[in-house]
Image (tube, rainbow, N blue to C red):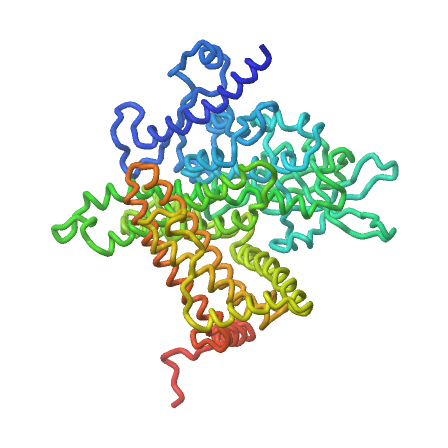
Length: 613
């Protein structure tokens, strides 16, 4: 009987999530009373759910589905204007179970996989404020408990966090430490009796900071190393607002995601029990990085969800609006914008779900680099696509009566939070270069030991990078894994991978350890890696779609081949820039211009109307 009840609970939770997907997909297109398509100026979107009510659960066990369940409207325009999410909307989100999406079922959550979490993110992303509130709660706010929390911590905190009775926040950033997280100054001092820590310091730009009851806080603590020396190291803590000494500043007045709560949080002699240390004492930096690394992948599906909705809204306008006696949709420059949006959405989806699938494999696979690449590509792609959608509407897109300008404002934060794209590019490339460096070091050691095979291998690569070489990694052909319709794209991918490998070796020979200081070089390596990962994702997805006969698979193949051709040529140009003494490389000029401007802290050119006579 207990197993039956548990199975029913799991079924109920998952079916509630699935019904959210199905019902919201319908409501996004329909007026609740007439069923007609919403005009593009309408800001109401409905989510329908069977919630987690007892009535629904009882009828589910009897094999019935109650159609008259929880229903509410999200008024995004109102949320944006008043800079707050109404209580009734928050209540509805909680009753849908959206505050416990990845919390295990035994603690009252939905227990969703990373793949299903990404899928729901496509829907919740249609309101930026709601998306950020939910993400701050579970992607980073409570994620530490799931990753490194003790059984006691999970049992104590997860049930109320899963229902939304308690909201979580992640407190890392400080006035003096942004991207340099290791430089935080908030301090936790162990009491004389060793029973609690006194927490003192301030955190800034904390999402959910004014509404949270549970905080994951990072602070400096004194740690005695194995050699007996005392060092300052970062430790993570679970802090309850009820511990006292916690004050929240007024909500920040932001450009976008205005309805999400963002504020300063101050800790003054806050007593935190030692059992509320999250992970190991002194291991807080690793905890913070694991939390941040695990959540970035969902930005791909969220961005794709936004763009797909924008395509629907914008296509309706372009296919009905006439200029010069022709529909806008007939003009090449407008068609180009729709191709861009469709292609970007396809790439984002492919990258996000490929990454989510890898993260869902047994064990704890490290997909932090892949997740970072998804975040970089999707955030920048979303910004471009939303701008293009607004451009199609022209003056109408600029008006607040339409949602385009709000989407644009909301999306700008994507390039900044959860790690700026500049920092993440360094992370992606340097992590890869570090791995390549280790492999290359082992090869050099093998050469010194007289391993002639390694010598010939390195020599062959050198010659291969000098002269054009036919690359074959087995993606196509008799035993290939790629569908023949994607053969050319697969060949482009193989060629890019091969020449990236030889280029990276040359870079490591040229710069050695000092490559970490060559940020313009590292950025190009990162961009090539991101493009290659995107090519891999779309080729894999399109090949699967055509192989199993999904609807519109020919459209997917067309998107994949078009994207891979563009990415291939972008990569070739970047690879050319990375060659020694390349005429395409303008790094020296870029640095010189920047130095001259920053030295004067101004634009230093004479005005075109200035005269010397």
